[in-house]
Image (tube, rainbow, N blue to C red; front, side):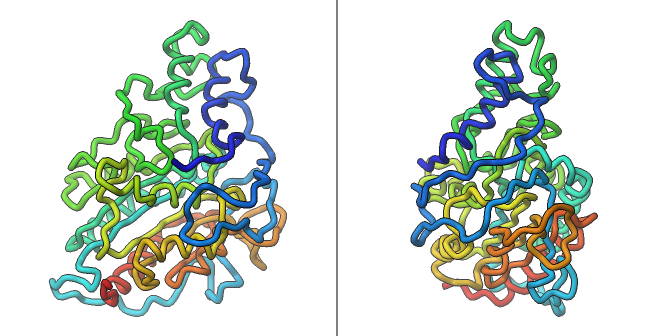
Length: 377
């Protein structure tokens, strides 16, 4: 089992508990987010990254803006989030080169400041689901969301303190927590397993209900009759006390024990499918073990070493670019930006752009192109 250093691992549970009157905890739902996140001092990790684990060469920042974003002015694009796609292929009803299979994994931050991106997210998630439904209608797809907040056990302690004790009156809302926090939902071990596909989002402005997915998996499959509703449900993770480490959460989601029979994400990753990774995290990911190259090598190992079998779309801050869209002090490098630049078919856009829809549409075009070209090994 992967473990994050304790200070980060316990943040969500401690914050939720503090909201509900635990005398030993001072943080809470209504508490402002910390202005800094202390980076662990370790030089390695128990997480398997598929290559030698190393610390990122980036400098840590103390930005409070999770909603800082990143269209790179230094990545060769003519404008943030745009690229020359060419003409999407006409498959003529024949299976694509990826044998018509695509595995989408969305890693989405649920940290406080994602609230600043709420309008873009509310617009983008249903639109992207529509794009998948329209343009990938002949494809056999899997769609999974993973909470970038690498923590476990936050729901149960908060619900016990808020609803099952006398610390907080009638419920969490009396202590400043979400009124609709899903304490009445029946839970499973996978609901509190880091890296597991999300089917019970629980946070401020999250879905806060069980997302019933066709087929009983922790990810959407092609046969899902209500694609837009299902995707919007699992992707609406809200904004609250969950320190985001997108790349650590991604590598946790794709560990063998998670993907094998009996694992939380069993059957999600298919050998012959195109893997599409979508990252939405506003602040720089300085806490995930490894660096852009080790994360890329991890994904390559998952796809048999074939760089043509992976597409990565990253929305994050662009404060490391010459002309950033995001407000704030410039810094050296966002590791998520470096990751997008490292992936052979990676694309990066500022999360501070007013809309993500065009970026997702261009991403869909890239995926179609790549699926037509991919010859599974």
